[in-house]
Image (cartoon, rainbow, N blue to C red):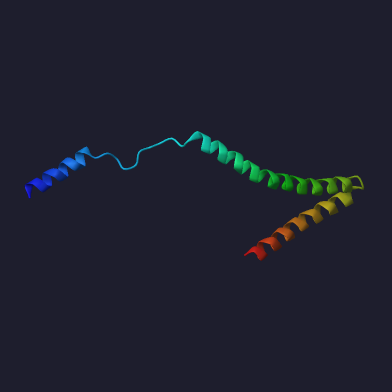
Amino acid sequence: MGGASGSAAEASTSSSPLLLPRAPPRPAVGAEVRRQVGLAAPLVACSLLQYSLQVVSVMFAGHLGELSLSAASVAASFANVTGFSVMVVNRA
């Protein structure tokens, strides 16, 4: 029995760690970033175009007067809130 405990002690002192820290490969990170940007770019462009449509509408209403500008702003805010809530309710 003494020999079994001696070999276990030797194995524990000479063992190496199971997980060694490594740096991630650089080419894979760059390729992943390019792929993510390629997927996200159309979504960003669509969001900016939708926002600019609302901005242009409010700008045109601003040339008509103060009352028209405030009405257009309130209507755009109401449309955003109700539209988003409908999309969230239908998704759930």
